Image 1: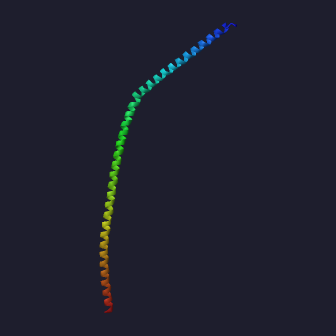
Image 2: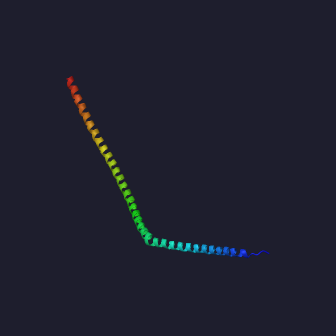
Image 3: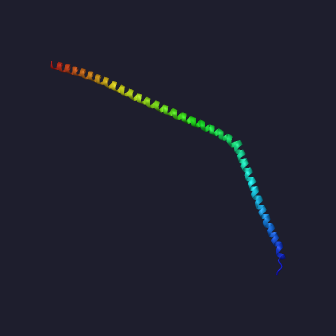
Amino acid sequence: MTDIQPLVTPLWIMAGVGIFETLLIIAIGIGGYRMYMRLMTLANDLETRHIAPVREKVDLILGDVRNVTSRVAFQTEQVDDAITSTIDRVDETAARVRAGVHDRVSQAAGVVRGVRAVIVALLHRQSHA
């Protein structure tokens, strides 16, 4: 049989290195987890101290913007209704004025035609006389 004594030492070294690598990987995992937990705590603290108050202010501002927007929309509808009713009244008044003027102009034209007919008749009668 061959003597395996020369191989034992390198095998022990390789086993030690394997154990060392395993412990090193476990330590890296634990360190990574601790770093993750610290970062999450920091992020939560940052959100609590800085972001949450800013978000509350932004939410209040957005609420105000919504209120102003709804008021502007309501007032715009009121102004539109007022303009529409004013235009309708102006159109109605213009139609009445037009009808009144037309009636008076027609009457005046009738009077002028009558006067003209009388003048023509008188002139025609004098030229025959």
